[in-house]
Image 1 (cartoon, one colour):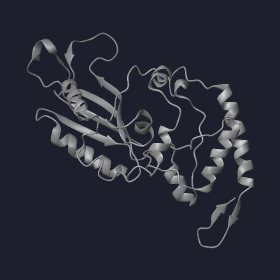
Image 2 (cartoon, rainbow, N blue to C red):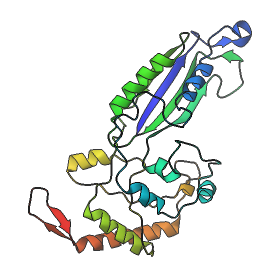
Image 3 (tube, rainbow, N blue to C red):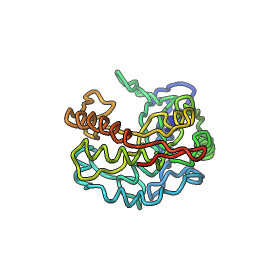
Image 4 (cartoon, one colour):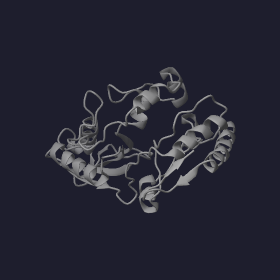
Length: 272
């Protein structure tokens, strides 16, 4: 994940529209134009080179996602998104868990609060959130975006683009490790299901940093649902899912206890 703050500059100060309307460069229009150009007609991120380093989708994972019980009607009802959009050629789950993406999380221009002064704003700003995949590197994405904005923005405007590399998180792919199989079994037991899909990392968490620093695989197990309204004022959690999750973790330790660490090379491996 990479957060980016973009500011577009027009007049040297806020100017009453009655004095300059039709003549002054309005940064709100130019910011809107730039944001509209971030995607092409197929829903792909239009920044040149954005997909160049993206690793191919892991073998078999698209089939595994297709096997999950899912319907677009159920997704729309639970996510309250109203419609499904995005990159053509991919399903909802593939876009969520396999494909890179960018979202606008904030736009501010003019008199956002209080009485309107009917002024052309001097600055318009937006916050962007890039979700990347293995192979992509955050510093390179930031450089590509900087070059794209510089080459796309109109001559009448200035801009500032600040990537938050301090809080950025490099992409992480859950490894094919025996402990993942143990977690899969534990989930089936914890949720009393005949079988369970394998958990992956679709959100935040400094997994790449942890895995690299500890030289150990990082596994994800979540109990959050899209209808829990994460980060909103009415965020909630399902008690039933939390309890099943707690049971899953207990079963996970039990599954790990049945495995042995076999040393025969520098890496070693787990076996049943």
